[in-house]
Length: 115
Image 1 (cartoon, rainbow, N blue to C red):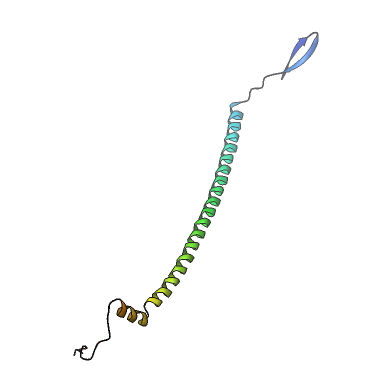
Image 2: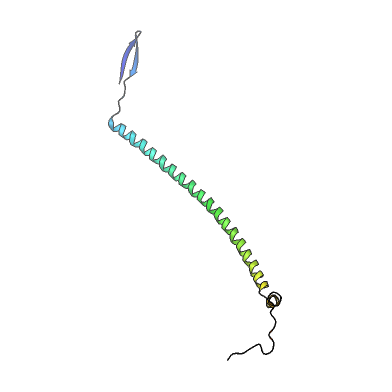
């Protein structure tokens, strides 16, 4: 597989150019395509994993914000219930009716009972 060449009365072996067959080229091409497909699949899995991790972190922030809002609204609801109970006491309503509206207790004969 080597050709001989004479150079200054010395014989040097030169390698013949090796031509690979079409079958070998096709096999090499399939191997490269397989490796490329494997690399792309691995890259896709890695990108998918990173995207999912980012989504988990984002949802954690959203959940934390919603939880804080819920706690604040529950506290406000408790405060409003206390205020409502305070404002609707019988004594306070009667005092407001007398002072602001000038209402008084009914006199005898002002109350009519209907059958």
